[in-house]
Length: 218
Image (cartoon, rainbow, N blue to C red; front, side, top):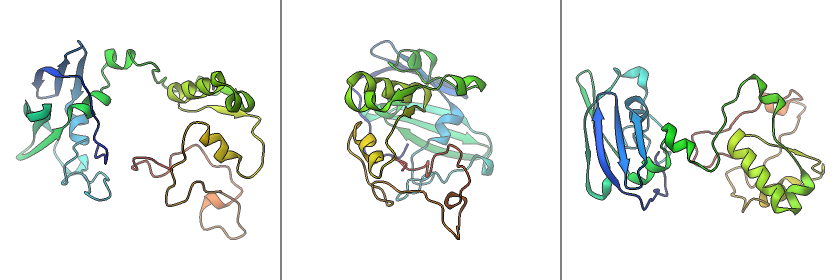
């Protein structure tokens, strides 16, 4: 939620409704978005709920009574202002219309997206998208198939990648510029004689996301 580059939208909020459990917005293009009270409270971007420098969430539901919405108002520049009540505690949160538009999760909103994410079930292992390395690197059709697979399934196998140093960066640069992190442009996980973490052993690593609270996780 706390983003260094605030999101923009040309769309306009033309109607607002709310009850204790959520907020409903109607946009000038006919789209309707509903946001649940827990989701909104969890995504409050204020300095009390997010560390102002690290941008990590500091608000914890377990430390508070379940919230309800006391009031919801559109302020200047169509900023949605919500006052939450949790027991005797009141909290004021503000959300920009660009962020709300980009993060809407109502059924009609997700259905109209070019690529709709598909939830995983036990059958995911048998339908993982698999793209040939040569097609991916040399054809627009291969690149498009990889990107669409990543957007819908969240994971795509790339078959036939040469096992040579530097090839991973070539694969990444096929999509766009590589953003360096504190680890550099890439970081090799290798087995070490005296490991200080399981990543540096010969054990297999399960799929995971490192530093998921970052805007751009490495």
